[in-house]
Length: 326
Ligand code: ES4
Ligand code: ZN
Image (cartoon, rainbow, N blue to C red; front, side, top):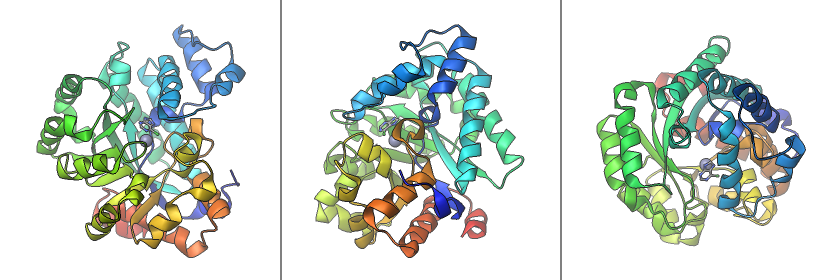
């Protein structure tokens, strides 16, 4: 991608970021070595060679494999701290980061280890920088609903350490409707709710996320452009969409960045934000995503400033914090 350049100075919120997707190959090997874990790649080069993804699932295979390196509270703290330092350097002033507890508890890492580590890493950076935000717990939609329900129960005692819940992993074949009960329980705990929908999955999944899960934002949502009725609804209801251009390119959601629907979405007056998704895997952090779309799609300064403002407005930050950042 084009260098982050001046987009790094636009104050922005990052709303679609999987913290496990910030694990760079060098850090994965370093943590694996100190934890006595063997990654299924000979070295960093062999791992990077696996980054030739063809779709979401081909990426998720590598993403879950690399997580084996993460075992201790300090691993999660360092992961979070490293990402946040990079993000601050890219103009991020507020982050609502996703994490995937089931990908860790299934390997014997307690959920409290994950949360404590991430919060410790966050505190290290927030102590020195103008940075706010927190954690969004994502349920893995391609695992049993009962497991998602157990995961929510396991964090009930520390709901105040979370901003909200989300829904991620392999989308097609795992509709939001499956998680209606789990999301109702999360909302009853006072948690915010978001869901990935319309990345690879159909418009129907966006509709279910809105009507059945009552989500406040749609993650990705790019396939809404196939339905004028859905576009009209998202516009009227001011539902934010957390779009991830370099992710869409690397996972084949678009075959060329020049074909990305982002300009059309802005043209429809949708509340679009730009985010990095899994920056270690997709070739760029958030300002790199801004620079890439500026280059490939010819978005002008005014449009990119609007997108940055959208991210602050679409965040769950308190009104006073939003006013400070706008
Ligand atoms: C993800 Cl790009 C994407 N989509 C769905 N689930 C995910 N988990 C991590 N990255
Ligand atoms: Zn995502």
